[in-house]
Image 1 (cartoon, rainbow, N blue to C red):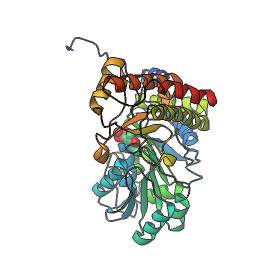
Image 2: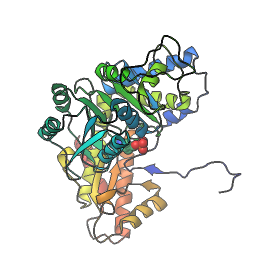
Image 3: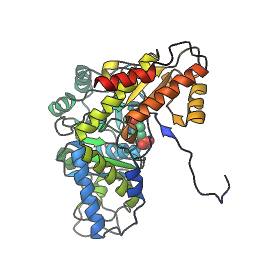
Image 4: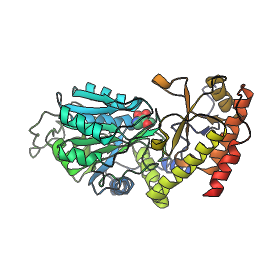
Length: 408
Ligand SMILES: *Cc1c(COP(=O)(O)O)cnc(C)c1O
């Protein structure tokens, strides 16, 4: 490519664990013209986005808004704002993203305590309650769907346990939101952050967040307003201020709230994007969207099983939107993936850490959770396995998926 050519990415079908192809309606929304930061139209869009994400998260939390940045920006803003240096946090780790929460909490200078299960398993509520009793943390930080292992941690009982022990419950649901059920109020989640590039059908770059009143009251105690916009009416909180300016949730709320106190310049195109992602899901219905992820995820599962591939992890706790399969010993995993990409334009995922080189991860999420994409991916995988010396069954994968759809 020379510097005189326009940007022209190759045609790809992204069937890995994220990112996925964005919904064309989202791309159109992102190309809309910019408007001023305090234009009533803009603040109107901000309020509308807040209302849409309340429905996505099934919450009445007033403080439901966007953090500018990828999902990690949402995680970092929540943990830095909830944890003072020295505060205890408990992080149950079941995969790569649990390690990430512990890493970010460590950088926040919190007193980090972890418990672990093997990759491919989930925690029982009793294990978490026992650790809470032992550690007595201020915050419990955990992942719902960890794409590194494809496991979906059941969370229905965790919020009540946290309430009982006066612990704030933070959850990263980036990979699972709207592909798996997560009613934030019913499950008493105090802080929840996500991203757009999994089941929400957008690109990465905006992190929707919701905070319970209890969590907001705590964060408000760390309030600090920066010089230059500070007035005589602004009072600092009684607790040590948050050690990041960009990720200070108090200041970000003052910008999204009635005061409209200047902080960053809202990333306007990403706001349009995040808002359209939510609108599309709400048009379908949140529960219907979860059901669609289950349907196509189960069809993909039927297909890979018909290929004779062994599924990774505890299948009863698999996320709807991604499946891990062991790479057969007689084939070179990277060669199969490369051929799928180069000859068919279809991308599936590799893995991290202890699973690297051992399993592939195949996603059916967001705009790509469809029948045609599932069937194309299975046909392509079947052909590439055979072309690379696979000794297992051939020709059955798409038929098994079709039969699955037919039975629904
Ligand atoms: C994919 C994923 C992320 C991604 O974070 P980014 O900053 O958007 O890259 C975070 N958490 C979980 C659980 C994920 O699966």
